[in-house]
Amino acid sequence: MSATTIDRVRELNDSFRSSFVGGAVMLTDAVDALEPDAKRRLLEKVRDFDRFEDGNDPYREHDFGAVTFEGERYLFKLDYYDRACRFASPDPSNPAVTTRVLTIMHARDY
Image (cartoon, rainbow, N blue to C red; front, top):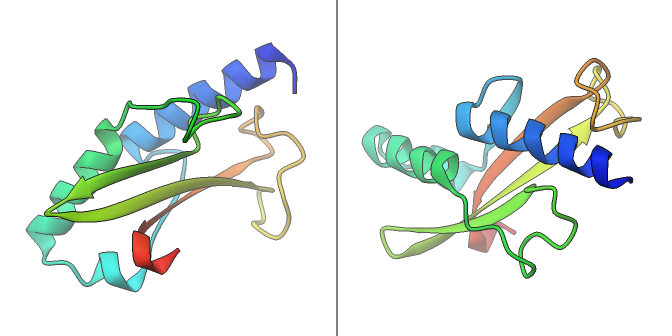
């Protein structure tokens, strides 16, 4: 991908992750089993995450991260699908052809 395309993907990823608007958010069973207030606070940590670096963001897309919550490690991963969610997106920089899916999981689920 070109630098301009990567910039656009990163912008779309940050917007979606920080708002949960513009795609689908999936929770693994371990995350979904949290008490409602704990789940809300964990999701807030994911929305507020901004510590992207070479080790967790080698392609500069802001599509993966890890947070510590109540002494436990949780991960999030963004994937790009076509609008029908059947195949990979043909162009993750184009929201007209892409569905973003953010999966939030306990590290042991990975």
